[in-house]
Length: 174
Image (cartoon, rainbow, N blue to C red; front, side):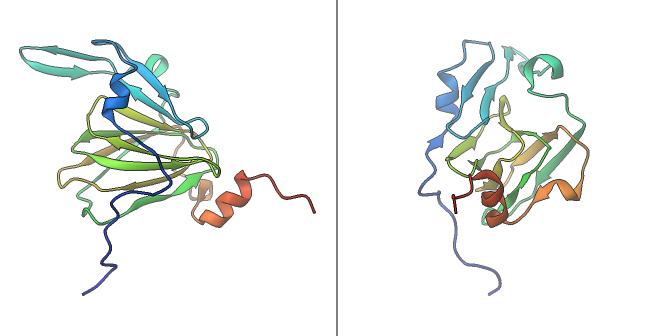
């Protein structure tokens, strides 16, 4: 057997928000924003139109998204037990959408932590710069689309949680 046999089923200190919570802030076909306890994080319910032909969901970059994307990528075919993310960005903001399937996202600002279920293609999770993000619990068919505010820059990543905490928490007085 290779790898770690444990399966994450949730983070103990991360209150969960789901699509049900997002329903509380949206009208029938209007967009809404749910503000997180984690500094700057927002769960967006994007406008959706339904008719006999199905659903259509659209986001206008200048109107519905917190930034104009400069990069887009997809994460898919992630085995359910795998964890993605586990980093923060110094300058780059991200907007995460499960365009298919579902997954969980834990957000952390160094003080507060909250977990979100992305389980509909009209939900988007905004992660501002200096937000630690973890994605896990991908369904077999999950496709995560990530819109980024900046082009890829390996120097923008903070990959060690201890370093992230040292940058986000006030230093103790000597």
